[in-house]
Image 1 (tube, rainbow, N blue to C red):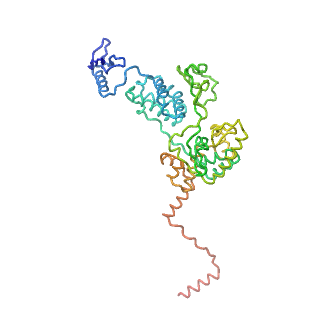
Image 2: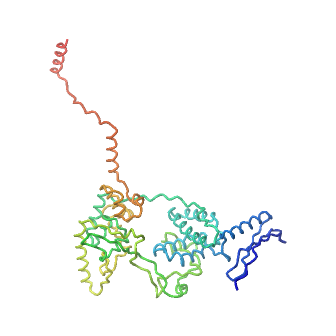
Image 3: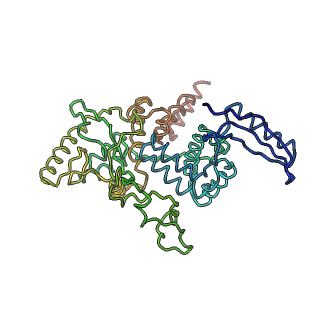
Length: 461
């Protein structure tokens, strides 16, 4: 027998408490009972308006689902655990979790999802900026929260995504600081003294990202055709629990109380003391005996465009062959201790290079080459794009080499050099302005020339 259809009529009445009350039947609850919702106001006109709004949502299919709404903290946990984890790359998911734990939950986590207002988000962003967070960090937090609220709105848990009503802080684009040609040569001259020379040559000369360079593997290097196939990247991932009771597994590491004001245990932390664990904490997976999915791992690049083959500069080929021969010698010397991973750049025991050690070596090479401090991205992709532009390579070709999906992204990577600007403006000036008059020779007049001029005057007369 099908469930009985409830009476959909609404009612408005004056209660004994002096308030006007309205009750609207929205449909049937999952348990079969009527979904009847309540509104109240000081005046009959106001409660009638609220009733009509509820009826309109019901008739248009926009009404939220019955039941108590979760808090922001509860919904973010649900969203990241069961929804975002199916789509996001591991590193992106880790970043979502980090910003949720450190920023979203402390800021607005206790608010009920349907009671969250734009003012709550604006206040949270203002506090984050006052604490010294960069505007770009606040914008990332805004995007994460907006995406989670968008899914909640789609599923009719809330009536509106309030994040769309808030303008996040403006972000100034990070100024690129690539190597000049002289700095590039100095950097590679310093790198030539190290076994990792080719890793830096590929980064500076071909614009490979750190993960792409460290994730290169020999089966994806075609030395005959002179092509790199960057089908993998090396990343350090966060461990996950492999046990059934993640909360109980990390029980000895849970910390539910906040640090005291005079805490000295976290003096070296950039963000200060870490936030206390939530009551349902499922972290601390690094100590799980059945941990999985963490540590250094080869993962697929973020986009298919990033996996496009890249031509190897012909002068690089002899050095690559030499590097391969030296690696074969290391393999024979290590014997059973060699851990084969197929990577082009490895440690002496065959394991892939650690990104942290790679970053530290980059900083050492900057000092040795006498180059001012800068980001590793500036010394690889920005440098390659800028020098290609100086060599006269057009933007679509640079876009293909760097494997960008949009040419606007390539233009942000390429920074014009002052010598190119000076040369361009010199040619511009010559186009519009006449050149200076030729300088006449200055002659010293003598008695002889004065007499000759006097004779010419008399002759003319």
